[in-house]
Length: 278
Image (tube, rainbow, N blue to C red; front, side, top):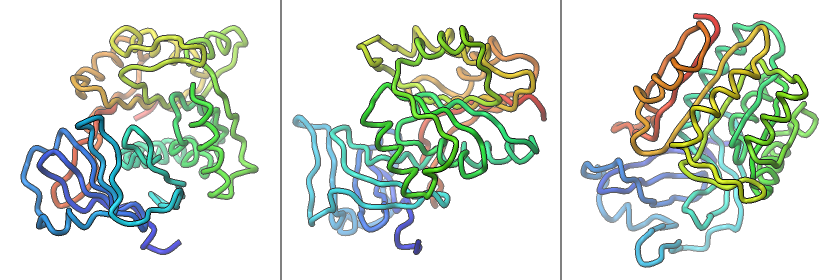
């Protein structure tokens, strides 16, 4: 795939971000970008797609945008389409986590079994599957899981050992505990608020501590890592550090801001990474 199909952050500022997703340039809200944009207004106005949450929100297209198109990030192909929430099907800030997990997989020197929770369109699932891991991909949205499955096909990973699960996260974790199933690594990206397959309520303020307890209880005797990401305002790296320290066994915890690299890097949530070894 040529560089023309890759993701690139072009600019940010004035509460917005300008990004190239393959052949489509999108102008979307970004509350963190309170500084001034670097590019002239004319370049922002030339964006193919513009999304706003004001006045009932929605997309405005300045040229015909494909119903679905491909974009590459960190060597992974994603099928993109505009959603009602302003997302396109990929979160570029998560590439930081994929690179960190790649190092953990390499240091393990053995095939790892990984659980990916709130897995959406499958970025971490595909990154880990490409490294030879066995991955259990779980999301409460059938639409999201189907989308991730199609992304796997786009990356020639149809034959990879991936379990595709549509379920409520807590019900699934309870069943895995009863079955005695264990995982070498767990990835989780919980939303601020969500609903399970039967409208079960997930609220991060109420649910995250017990969710982490359940995750660490499912780790194998030779665990590798737990990688937690969060986009909820107020959940800073220090907050995630405290949550991990209360739950994790002995090991290494590193935290930080997720970011999209550019001349002016764009902060995009927080992460906390636990590893069994330094």
